[in-house]
Length: 267
Image 1: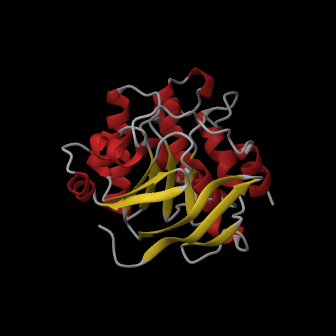
Image 2: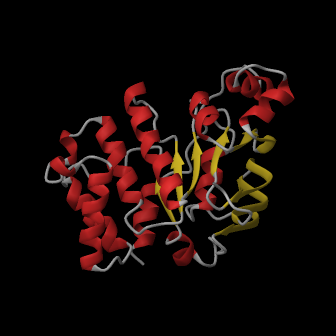
């Protein structure tokens, strides 16, 4: 259950790439312990916003606070406040599950004895203990996603960002992963900020939703309030009512986010 403290705030956030305004005067807040969904069509500005929140892109203007820290001027403190599961696969396939977690723990400066304990706990949590010594290249897509969630939790963050965490997974695996996430939110009061194109995930799991389109927040509220506002029966219908029905092309990625992340995390 969320409390009344805002753990994420974005105020008048703008990001320009030359003449293109990818994020246009966006403001929102997320309460501590809340499950918050960030929805939008392809190219709407979701991933760009998440990259700004997680120190991977510098805003053109506006202010962000992550657990009280400025991701621009206080990158180190901000990064220790959150974990992240990227949309694109980012594990090292030539390392074992244990080695991937060990490497990430070293990057975050987790002390050795605590790191080993934490890895053991997380592998058990995502039900990969029996595959801890297997190379990641032998894992299924669902197993890799579970390992990425474990990796994002290695430093015991307060916030977990997930950019389309269940994309390409079968319904059984998607449900399994959401069981883990809801357990984290319930038992550790972890704030979860996620984007998804699966409207039923947002409808079932999110306590509040913000919908972004063409770089602007066009609606926000609970899943039910968005359906009431648009006089629709499902969140998918509400989403289409708010953003239109034309097919969108995926915007060009800002590029190299995982490479930039690992390079900067070593500093």
